[in-house]
Length: 155
Image (cartoon, rainbow, N blue to C red):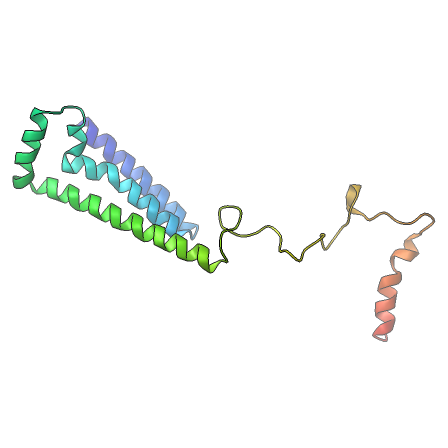
């Protein structure tokens, strides 16, 4: 009785985590989490969880109850659904990674910087995010590039 309650609580918690993962639009991972969360309740329903503690007489009683009890068959059905969900989640995850361009770093498979990005667009090197100026340069020299662009466009 207590084992079934603990297994049901574990499955409910796992399904809640799967729901939150799906809410974040990570459906392949949510499918795998849901599959793994169904395993404890499937083991409890099929009676396989109680067999691990007692080998011998429990196997014979379980085998005789296998034929007559629909709850045991429902437990095997839940385990089969968990297996199918896990396989589908793995296949969807591989398909998503292939579509994103192979294996990348990080969880989402996205790269932090593209290969063409050699330096940051804003800011520069050195402390404070500013580029080092040549000696004797003033603030007016910093705007010379902007002035050249404006003159080019006739502004």
